[in-house]
Length: 357
Image (cartoon, rainbow, N blue to C red; front, side, top):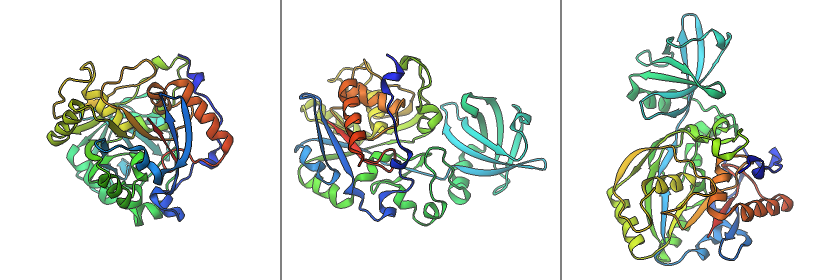
């Protein structure tokens, strides 16, 4: 399938840089486009009405991971470098990007730098990656998240977060149910839910479950933008996930009873489809943790998810391709055409959303 099939024009003005709370709105005040796959129908509404589309007995699955700072400063000889962490790998290495005052071509595999914030933390360059990234090894690895949390700054290529907001109001960049630190970008679909709306959904008889997926390199623009001519030739990065015993039991009960499973975000979708891959829709799910590099594109057979909530995505992205795999390419691209013509929707992590029934 051609990547060009997922092209459309997108004005940068419709991609806000700050969460809606920091722009004077409520979390659940955004717009929502609803796609009904069975009727090939498109509806435009408000996110605050989402409970109207849920049924008693539905299982709403949320990702409880939250975003950390991603950038530290290191010393090599007389040179200082800005090191931005993009994602972690299953082999305990890390994908990073370097920015330095001198030419980066001077940096070679094998060079080791020391953190300017904590001299117990070092970073060794292992090998160059595509898109100007490096594979690196932090030592000791368990110290990295602690130093990032205490001293790190936030650097973003896709959306330039306000550094003052980031330091003063970090909770605005997290879902209200977030409890597990580890993501390097925002699991953004969950940002729309307020505590009051979740309470209303629960009171309606919707069951709520939680998984953890730490967003990493898959979310960077360089990785999620598909540059290959054929979508099948694209690859996504590995990300860590954890499905608890409680959540596995909730999923198994819902599946056995024929209740709908609603994934909040592509992170939940990838996690649930990873743990049920090649299992069919009736097989029992086991509690597990691991890494997923699952790339979902049209033709994928879904085994776990019945309904998807996701944000509005950029053209030629792996996210919009996943959305098209679930809802159908024609319906998704027709909805994006409507959205573009209406001109009132906002895109990306702080924008509006799409519910696919």
